[in-house]
Amino acid sequence: MPRNRSRLRTANLTDKVAVITGAGSGIGRELALLCGGRGADLALCDINDSGLADTVATARSLGARVLTVHVDVSDAEAMSNFAQETVDHFGRVDLLINNAGVGLVGGFLDTSVKDWDWLVGINLMGVVHGCNAFLPTMIDAGRGGHVLNLSSAAGLLANPQLTAYSATKFAVLGLSEALRMELAPYRIGVTAVCPGVINTAITQNSAIRGDDAEQRRNRLTSTYQKRGYPPERVARNILCAVDKDRSVAPIAAEAHLMYLLSRAAPPVARWAATRLAELTK
Image 1: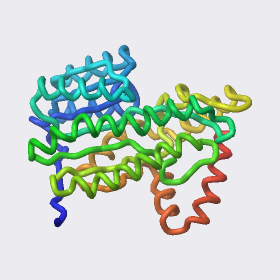
Image 2: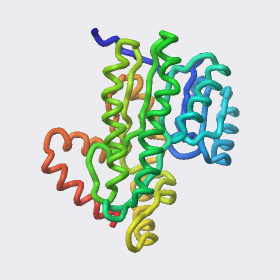
Image 3: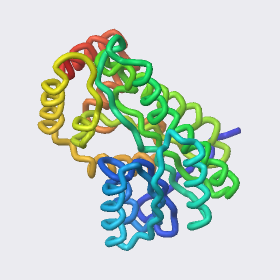
Image 4: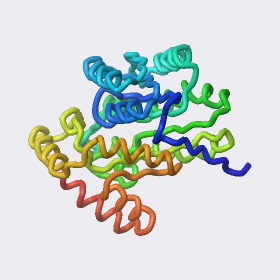
């Protein structure tokens, strides 16, 4: 069947409903405020109640109508209930943003099975649960729409100091590319978003395994702060990717470079990944 492009336009989101997981901070918060400022109704969730409340207060000051629910995205039933509440409240979903995620710094030998369960449950299964919960409604409505799944530059180019994290983000990228083909007949676009070094609280919140954890955290935080790429800019670029119906959206120069190298020159890409890993040692 030929591709019918979704082409959800984001400059004016009046009468559109955006669902955003992990909306209490960072990129999720900025996406909520940007969508709300452009007229969208918002269905937001997070486990960070205080952060979510702050996002809601700001979004409402911009004139947005907002539904919020405390949801752990690794819980399939909770996500299904969130989807039902959203449909009951707003009657539709146009933009699904599976943003919630967690980080872990460490090589494979330093990463426990418990760590793997935690990362996979949120970073990968959180996306699966979001799609399972909301896509039937979007398909049945027949109005098209768009799905944004947050991968990472670490999902484009493996990092030996982010082994488990990279694995989950590679999985999100693969899932998104397969979904894009499957959902094309329904005019639902799918974009895998791959941010690079973005100045959010992830460096403070990520678990770090191995020796000298606090020193490594300080170096990592300093690197991200010096890079200075703000989540507000990420949010704007993400909505631009929706307008262009991108399959993959690298965000920031280093992510674009990783994307190109991983496809055009894999040996060079692996060399670059090894050098990049030095930042997290």
